[in-house]
Image (cartoon, rainbow, N blue to C red; front, side):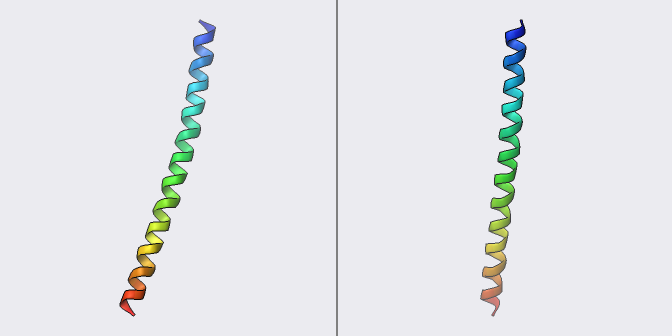
Amino acid sequence: MEDQTTKGNKFKLWLKRVGVAGFMFFLIKGLIWLGIFFFAGKCAMG
């Protein structure tokens, strides 16, 4: 019984880490794309 609880806690911890890392990855990726489109639009407008 104790082994399953420890296994569950490790899984939850891993899921939290992956969740935070995934969120940060997509946040940064999105900001980079916004910057690319912003500067591309600014250059196209003259």
